[in-house]
Amino acid sequence: MPPRFFKHGELPLVLLWLVRERPRHGYDLMAELARLFGPGYRPSPGTIYPAVEALETEGLVAGAPIDGKVVYELTEPGAQALDGRLEQLADLEVRTGVLLRVGDGLPEQVDRLRARLLPLAGRVDARRTAEILDRAADDVEALLHPAPSLTAPSSHARNGHDR
Image (tube, rainbow, N blue to C red; front, side, top):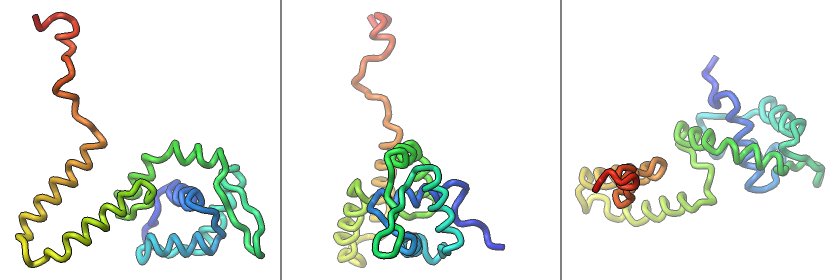
């Protein structure tokens, strides 16, 4: 048996994210999962529909029949549950290399960077370019853990110990 693609709780989290983007029916969810995570993950009705039904039972999504299909949308409790698990979503994105949260503009920035760099291939030093991009990625990752400000007064100065 192949290893599970999603860790415990990740599939419902991704489903919540997808219906947050827009209301979706089951087949649309499967197609989007296949597009995002394929070929490493192939969604099946036997996995997706029970997961969506469980989300509906929990009140995290609401389904309504439209044109012969049940279309699901995120409920307020679903939005709150999703907001409380954004760190887990970020971990999933890092582990899979799939960026789900496109609303923040990062994918567009990455696409713009790629469009600017590809014409330079073979015309610039690839090793130096890779070093520059690695440093830039390090800087972006550092945004998660900002360093203390060097201009902020130290606790000693605030307590009068630096006189």
